[in-house]
Length: 171
View 1 (tube, rainbow, N blue to C red):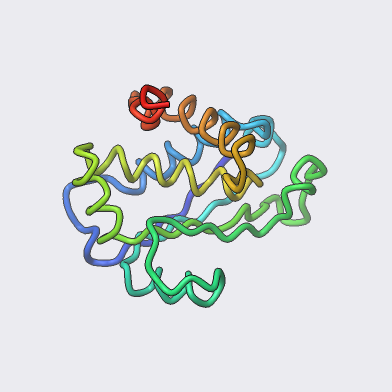
View 2: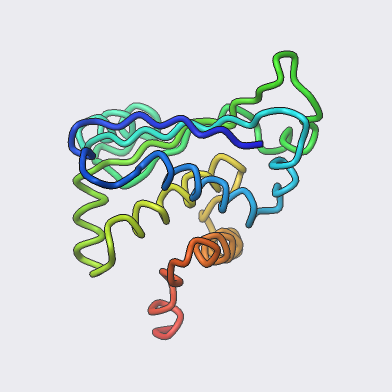
């Protein structure tokens, strides 16, 4: 079972149910990954999503990645990816997968520039961040392809179009 905790700063306050969106996106990501069986294990898998701003994400990006700029999403895994398959049970019945944090201004600007719905872009970024928690990455073409396929499949279950379709046409 997956439990998603959400914390949102004031920029994110509107009529959107970000808690439900984050939970659905994280579950879709895990379900589309090679770790889908984690959703049926005999413990609660926890994931934290923080909807923040460019300032905080900039600070975290600089401190943890050495990049002096904001970014759309950061992920902080709490379980080494090579240990995910060994999770059989936990002492307290819970396992914290990690944290995903999004920057409002960057996410909003990207959605606008791509002419896509903000909620769909946020869903994509929660999927993307969740996959990073599972050890997926995009440092080379092979890894990027695997991660993108998981994203496409996860987003399809949410009724969201392939965000890479235009790139594929231009290749």
